Amino acid sequence: MKKAEVMIATPANARKLQPVHELITSYELSFPVALKFRLGAWAGESAAADPPHGNTSERSPAPGAFAFFRMNILVTNDDGIDARGIYELVVALRGIGNVIVMAPLGEQSAVGHALTVSLPLRVTEFHKNGSFFGFAVSGTPADCVKLALRTFLSERGLPHPDIVVSGINHGRNTAVNIIYSGTVSAATEATVLDVPAIAVSLTSYHPDADFGPAAEFMRRFTPHVASLGLPRGTLLNVNVPALPTPEIEGIAYTKQGASFWEDEFEKRVDPQERPYYWLKGRYVLEDKDADIDDIAIRDRKISITPIHYDLTNYEFLKKLRSEWPKGF
Image (cartoon, rainbow, N blue to C red; front, side):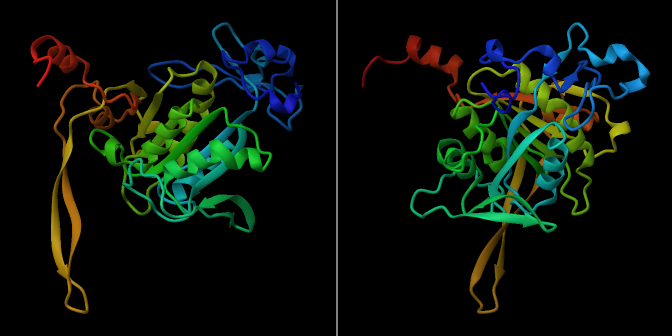
């Protein structure tokens, strides 16, 4: 196997890995209070470069550390390929892996897991700041992931991703928002196709929101997820509070909450005097327990929630089988 094809240590390919001395990066992450990382020789840097803090022992992974090859990462979103969130995320992840961007041409917020079935999908190269940035797709976030993993990457001779990262969404994806989110649905589509995935959101809708802390967290967190893997069909839904990094109080592993939107449709009239409706609403924080996604964010913590697409209500299924009629 060529070195370029050996991207990351995972349970599936662990026996095929190159010797330890070929590692270019190693991390150590401490939970749950904070994430810390330990750097070996970065790609393009000399292996003899001074390690952090001048401690030569830092060149080798310590017991319990996670060792990584340079991984392949597919990045998408639902705010569109020209959004600031995806740009900040890509810049951060390029420091740890080979990033391929395949994202909607325009905003696709709240489209859920919609797929395009009655129109063709167009893919165009997208440039940003004078350089190639990624591939823009005339479809939904789920379209982007399905097209990339099923067809497009192999057609272009591009590597299959070790992990899919969707975001950084401009606004929280907690509680009921998960159902509507194109960001989460893109990550869900990856898990359907058996690729580990993370959805990441910044909990601010402010037009000048700072995506930097969320992007930096993902640079540290993504290799950890890719190395350990996730249960089949499960993704991690990450929500980062809109705070400077020093003000974030660590992380919390959380459950999906029950908070919701009080929706209403405002009736308006266009210049031709035809009525139309504009959705608006107020977010109602319903939860109180510390292990709920929205509450962790309120407590200045990064919320990490494992979610999956099995929607079966197993408790009620037991009741159906034991108490309901066997036929009608």
